[in-house]
Image 1 (cartoon, rainbow, N blue to C red):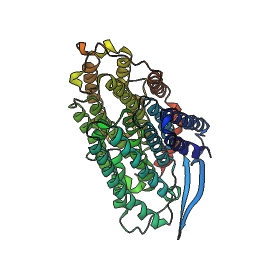
Image 2 (cartoon, rainbow, N blue to C red):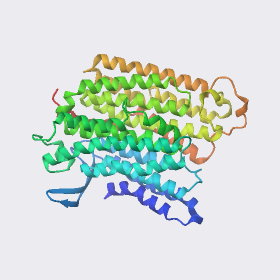
Image 3 (cartoon, helix red, strand yellow):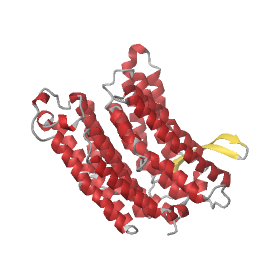
Image 4 (spheres, rainbow, N blue to C red):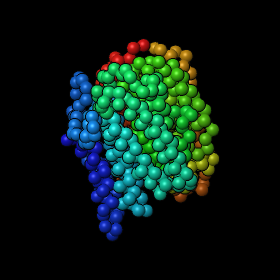
Amino acid sequence: MELSLVLFLPAAAGVVALLLPAAQEQLARWVALAGSGAAFVLSLVLFFRFDNAAEGYQFTERHTWVSVGDFNLQYYIGVDGLSMPLVLLTTFLTVASVLVSFNITMRPRLYFASLLVLATSVIGVFVALDFLLFFLMWELELFPMFLLIAIWGSGRKEYAATKFVLYTIFGSALMLVSILVLAFDQGTFDIELLTQAEFQDTIIPLNLVFLLLMAGFAIKLPVVPFHTWLPDAHTNAPTAVSVMLAGVLLKMGGYGMIRMGVGILPEQAANWDIWIAGLGAFSVLYGAFITLRQTDVKRLVAYSSVSHMGLVLLGVAALGDTGLTGATYQMVAHGLITGLLFVLIGLMYDRTHTREISQLGGLARQMPLLATGLVFAGFGSLGLPAMAGFIAEITVFIGAFERFEWLTLLAILGVVLSAGYVLWMLQRVVFGPVRHEWDELTDQRAWWEHTTVAALAAVIVLFGVFPSILMDMINPAMEAVAARVVL
């Protein structure tokens, strides 16, 4: 039951934190750290126990949940080379999110309970092998995310939270139509069986089923033009929520595209591949150009995520094992790098109380440690070698160039643009003329600040220097997915 423990430990710790007496509510942070830390350690154990040479899913658990007519709804979970790295990423970023929330003083019990339930729902999406269980976990994350933005956010927080929920529910409705059509055709919600199925008499054409399914995932990824909820959510969310949102929630969309879109409907994926690739390349360029115009450092990073997720879509569209492996690696790398960026921006905002680039400058003099971390994370975002982002991007480009030469060349321009907006931001915020109004600022100094930043930076370098740690796990699973696609 190790995988079930990984799944439910965060939520269980959240319940404990919520039930703490009011006089001891500050203990909620330590309960949250213990629960998220235990889940991370256990997921790390599963990661090293994972057999890269074995086919199919590992650490599976199957129990009948509800029997309704001919349908047996199951609690069926497991991981393969696609989901295992994403589960580890989620548990790792959950610990980071708890640590950067150690200064939360407003309603800490509800805050940490919401954060940990959010973690359980995201892990559930990655491990669910029953389509309805997958959908349940997909929807479950809406409630804690709404609370986290609407209560602990800033600015137009209620607007941002509502917009996030409305966009996601709209995508979920489209996705649910596809789920029901596929399940009723085969008489099962078992994702493993649906992956092997030959669909014959679906009530709506399979091409339309595929488009509805992909639209639901595209909204979550997000893909242009479904991306407008993301900058608002990021800008108004607290730091830890931005880390979880950029680090793992966006990856639910990419994961769904590979697992369900390509995995269950490979023929339809091949029919629409050029359109998907075109949308991916457009997202890369559009996201990069819009990022260049941002004056708020948090919105800048948010829009850069739109551009980077376009690379995931481009890798998925390639439909080969190299492109799909690159897309998966890009999800992990982006989660780590953008998570670090949002941590550092949050620490900077706690001290300066502004995110406006025009009001910042010369912070390397007042906050050398924080400034160094920001430069490191910025270089990771633009794809500097020896960091995880470089390996991810080059793998996507190699996989996509085999089929979409011109679209890949256009997407590569996004790397040039990313260097432009990252270096421009760093020059304005970290370097530039010294602003003496920041002379009294303190550098990062709390143990939880040092631990979070150092751990994220170390893993980014680890996966950049030794990519085989992930590649050897991801590639066999992607070969199995690509083998079903006939081009």
